[in-house]
Length: 219
Image (cartoon, rainbow, N blue to C red; front, side, top):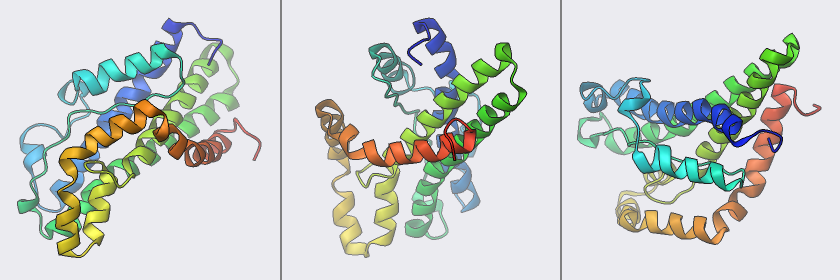
């Protein structure tokens, strides 16, 4: 997207980023509701209205700074939807399922953006096709980044909830005690470039697959 101006990049990225972050959180709350916890629903968080989910730092400041930096790596988060494990039918198992819902939603959205880009290529109308193709690329990229990062087994990311649900109770309890320090580990990995190095190959492989679906790479 180097050929786009900064304003054009913002226009292309804003909708995919907001939807990726918002739907990720709504998916957590929706699955929690299916398994007995209506906390998010009662607080009005099961809505696609992004205003109800915006975190000033994670939804606006960080993605904006990353976009302005020109690194091509965009990441962010919304306000986590509240989930009360005590309301779940099987707290340990169901929390793992609630955690899986976020990355699963991002993968489905990546597929949706890929199909939008493919449709844009098929209609071949420059004034309409190019914006949809660029937005499709952005949608694929941000959703894959969110899905893959959130699958890391670092508390409080979704991957840690999934792993905790698979561990024996005693090990899960000890593992979950690391949660207060997980955010600092993520900041360290991001600041040192280790996060990008760890995720570079799986992200590239996933992007290639979804870009093929979009018709942007030869199959």
